[in-house]
Image (tube, rainbow, N blue to C red):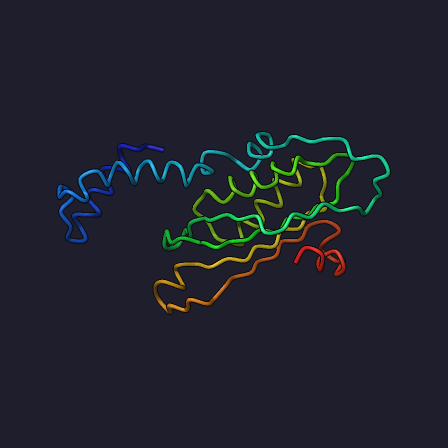
Length: 187
């Protein structure tokens, strides 16, 4: 990320909306915004493959594991930014499930994958697809499900201003695509 360019453009944005970027409360805002964007959009610098490699720590499946045993983690909290309005997508809960094929991911790695994938400008539908792709690669299984529920400030704080609206997206791959019992365990 070109932080100096971000600072320059934030300063211009402040001027364009009629603010004085040199006044006390705004004097350091361009630098603060550049640091914030570097942090909250960190995922832009990584491909899905690179995230899978970065957080792909696996362990052998426990003895006695069966073919349809499943790992489900619910209510992983993330936030992101809508690529249409640069608006915050917040209060997002991610449920991830996968059927291991000989190895399991470290549980914290699943939350880290969700967090890093969320740190991009995007749509919630794309976030679910990206998480599913990363989990599939990292865990070595095509059987992955991702369900995301979240609020979007492009709907809650502007436009329609419907504060109770929540968006739910579902991404099902492999065995999850057709098996309604498996889907129900992720929702």
